[in-house]
Image (cartoon, rainbow, N blue to C red):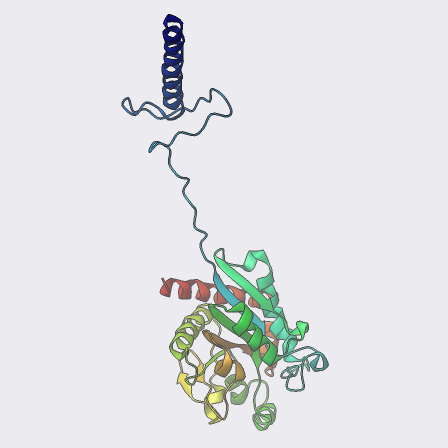
Length: 293
């Protein structure tokens, strides 16, 4: 019996010792809760179980900020054989250059990191990629799903008015009218209010860069001029635009300049002026994003 008691005592001492050891370990790992000091972790052995304690905080999960998605598209295609019969190369400039080249000259700047806003995700589709009109609309709606769609174009005029302008000469009244930028939206689009809001912001930025609005189309009685100061037109049937009817996000079509006018053509061929336009577009995107917060 004495031997049994002796061994029982040894077992009790061992248990008490182990419990004391665990308490010391917990204090060293997480700090004594009664003498609350910042815990300086000292691991006594690698396999020590982590104590359950309020002193151990769960790591903070960082939420990734969602980027504002913008699709920049060059209107028209370089080779309709690779797109569709409904697609073309666009208007011809005074110098005989097809519009799609001018469109790509502007859009391609947005492929450079230098001309991308920090919290904006850009998707750029160039005319030389030969994506048909219907394909890019379907791709935008089903895959890209952007917050904003901007299609880049360059303008022209009716043949009768071009002939008249040529008769008047380079400094005639008609050429002064057939020049400048314009914005195109549609009241038949479900995002009309947002489209118009962005169009106004974008036009203001072009005006700030000393570009002038094109008021020529208001004289042709084809589509209404809804903002004379900013050169914004409402494209409704029968002069509507496919993208403004079918895209499921805020959309603006921008005519950067009127390339049938030789002065506009020369102006928009300047890299310096192209960058001014790119900066104007980015400034407008930045302002528009702020309106969404």
